[in-house]
Image 1 (cartoon, rainbow, N blue to C red):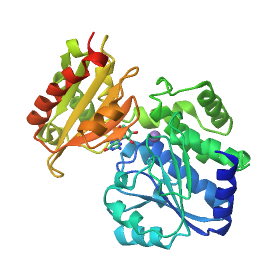
Image 2: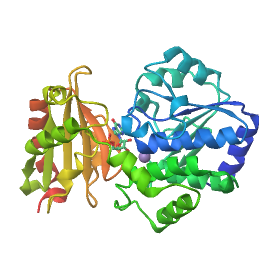
Image 3: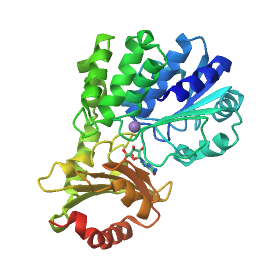
Length: 338
Ligand code: 5GP
Ligand code: MN
């Protein structure tokens, strides 16, 4: 944050009593960790802050401090709408385009109060009075630590907020292994541990609360793995039927795509997940090195994200989607060929 952004933020906070805080649709650890930490911080500062999530999120995030106070648009649409439209100030966290909020988009379009964006994705849109955007950051949670520190309030970060921020940094960095993890990230993590975040407990809550059916779904996914060695690419498909047969719950397929990247020599990985109710194939794309899955998802799959992690969707059937995907790979020969 530069000095002008800090001053502008302070001026906006001074005038704001009711504040709404919005994560992206299908919120992940970084989205829920950052919004809940910000909500706790603003509450300590005397504001009335409410997190409004576009839709539900996985059970492994429901232990986060403040979770019970979250309004979910799909469950409480009129309360959510009123909260956002009555707010004096609206924060949007971990996304940079209203379209990333699904059905909440039309509500956000009607906001007349000023907005503050805190986000680490590429190509931010310009809806906010303060745009704190930094694509070099590991996570929005790391940015939120810097944001609170820039406002002179690092001392207000308590154990609950520290646990939320630790969670988002951990999940967005693949437990501190992606290249976005810097020495500063580790310093922030160390400070959060000093403030009461218990690393082993958080890791257990996020990664060691599997159901048997989820592990069996992973078995199905790994069975469906296809390796295209000549393109240094691997992908996984999961059909709606396979999800249904394994009592699928939100978040169950989280992390599956990373198994593709654990194969020696593979630098591009995709998971295609059929969703018959939305009539789309949801895709998660991952890469290693310079191959930009953000650009790939933007160009071909109505999506985006970061250089090494992006999402998108296809309106074709799962078979047609895979066939079409394979025809694209030769176009990226310069980056993907051995
Ligand atoms: P995931 O594959 O885990 O859903 O998402 C990976 C990254 O891409 C996240 O940073 C997420 O915010 C972003 N992302 C996922 N889906 C989309 C999408 O449809 N559009 C855009 N612009 N970004 C996405
Ligand atoms: Mn993030």
